[in-house]
Structures are given as C-alpha cells and as structure tokens.
Image (cartoon, rainbow, N blue to C red):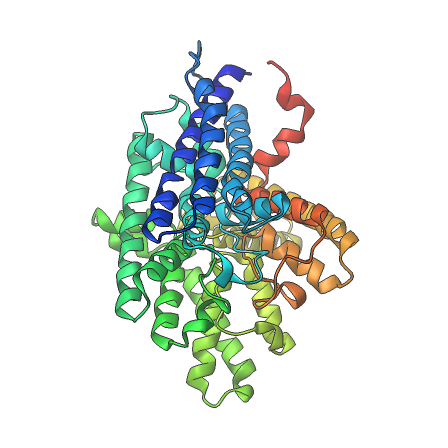
Length: 482
C-alpha cells in the first residue's frame, strides 16, 4: 500500500476544499454579517490548512496507486470534508452541536438534503450559501472538481474517480482524465447558470436563485426558506425546478454526445428512455390518486410531477406534504426513492441502469426456468452486456439491501415509529432527504439521538460513494502492505 501517496493526495484535496471557504466569507462580508460568523469560516479554514498544508508538501517517492488506494483516498476525504466543512456552522453557534453540524454538512456534500435546522430564517446568508454550495461541489464530485482545476494529483487519479463517480460503469469522456473532468464541469456550470437565469426571470431573487440552482444542480434539496419551494407559491418556479431536477438526473455523457453532434445516438439511450417513461407514468399515477383532494387535475398533475421529479432525482425539494397522500401515492414515492436517477448524473439511488439490467436478468432466469436448454443473453443499449458487469450489478444489489436492512435495524433502536426509521434510512441511503412520517417534507431529523445522527451521516456518505469505498475501510485486508 502506498501510504505516502494516500496521505499526500488526501492532504491536497483538503487544502483545495478548505480554500473554497473563501467564497462564503465573501458572501458574509457582502451582506455585512457579524464578525462571529465571518471568523467562524476563517477559523475553520486556518485549522484545516494548518493540518493539511504541510502534509500536502511532502515529497512522495512513488505516485502509483491501485483501486484499493483510490477507495481509501475517496472515503477518508469525504469524511474529513464533512467534518472540517461543518466547523463554520459549529463555530458560528448557528448549529450549536458538533454532531448536528456534521450531519448537516454530510447531508450537503452527499446531496441528501436531510436537515436538522428547524428555522432557516435564523441562519445567516453565508451559512445558507455554504450549505447549497456543498451540494454543487458534492454533486459532480469534489475529487472530480479538484482534478479539473488543479495540476494532476496523481497519474492514477482515475482510481479515485472510479470510487466517486456514481453508476455501475465508469468511463472517461476523453482520452485524458483531466479533459474529462473539465468537460463534465463545463457542462455542469453551463446548465447551472441557465437555471439561475430562468429562476430570476420567474421572479426569484438573485441570491436565492443561485442557492436553489446549486441545490438543483447537485440534486441536493437544501432550501432557503421554511416550507421549501412551497414558500414561493409560484407555478412558474415549480415548473422550472421540476424540469431542472430532471435535467440534472440525466447521465452527463448524453449531454457531451449531443455537444459533439451525436444527438441521435445519445437519444437512443435505453436508460434515458426508461427514466423519462418512469417519470411520466409515476406523475400520472400520483395525479389520478390525489385528484379527489384537488380542485383541478392540472394542479394535481403539477404537484405530482414536481414530487416525482424531486424524489426520483433524489433532490428532495417539496411543494406539498406527501405524508397526507393516499397509501398508493406514497408507495410510488418510496419506489422512486430506491430507483433514483441515471448513472453518471448527480442523482442518488440505485440508478435506472441497474434497475433495467436487474429486471432483464430476472426475466432471463424465468425464461431459463421454463426452458433449461434455452440460451439467453442480456442486451443493454442494443449490445450484449458482458457477464462480469451483470454479476457485479447483482452482487451490488445483494450487498445494498443487506446493508440497508442492518441500518434500519440500528436506526430503529432510537426511534419508536417503524415507518420513520424505515424511510429515514431510505432517504439518507439513497441521498433523497425527506422520508415519511416524522422525517417527511415538513419534518426534520433534529429529534434523532446523536448515535442515529452519526450513523445516518455515514449512511449518506456510503450511499453517495455507492458502498464500496466506505466498506473497504473496515476490511482488515485493506490495510496489509501488499
């Protein structure tokens, strides 16, 4: 194991991450916030730089790393970013508990959007900005951002990107990894700026538009006001954000292919078609289910579409309390939490591609049961899928649901209501944010015991990194030299 390279890379990532605190410091100065709030960011940044800057300057003998080291770098970096990123919230006393602050920052970076803050009106603009900005940098990946703007951390940076980029398969857009990272972020920033412009034109103030665009781009869901998007009472804003969430739930490789003139090939994506069909069918099913409580079907469809878009992309914005919906509609919401968005997007969940491949694998097993001599192959996007990828996805599903069950069991220790415990894990594991009952759209995670908050924070990070980078930390063989 190349421990020097692991330490050096983590230190460089943390130095880069800490320097990003200069942006909310500027926001705080612009709005004339108290010295306590400004100094909270300064103190957090100084502490982090004092620890990691000397380590980043250490000369490393060998820069080569394997996938194991990539997993270690990624998982430790995310835990450290959540901890040091939460310090401004804690030092400013706007979140007096360090555990609560860690939960909030873990939720921000993993683009979960679950919150312990009960009154957003009491939170300063710089802290609100830092929360939303954490969605933006965590959505596409902090390591991807570092690779895009800094000199290459290591010739083996691909190992770290494999651990951070969501989805069953990792692929570079361009031959050079740095070019791929920059291309991803150019597309990401351009779409975010378009969303800011659309929200401003719809009547949302500029600062709030920027924050909501960050939260949408990262499919995170931290809001600026109590009541989330329902606060604005604006159908235009709801439609813009509903479409915006769907856009960021699409695989970014598709946007790249469109840019280089391969739109027809991109639009043939099986995952994209399935993603849009699920959104359409779920929106209609919910609209028909809740129609009798609305004055018009159009309004029911609008609320159904927004909720489906928010939940399936694991953003977590809310315009209505779906806790009050009929059981049929709530079960659709729960299923969407598991499915999630597309691979290679900023959304969480299992990913649509995994669901498609798993369903096809199950169908093939039925065919073989009927006719044992029948030879079947699994096709995805018009091509035969290799057996290794298929087996890896099925193994992932087994591990995914095994860990999910263990987490529900552990969270239930401190919670009396089964549905609250069950959906709290679903919402954090899949980086959705709101669940049902006490953790619903108008609820909060503040009531959980500290043990549950720490556990759910790690569950969020584990879900964002798709299990393996965190699990590998607890595997004894990981730490052997060879």
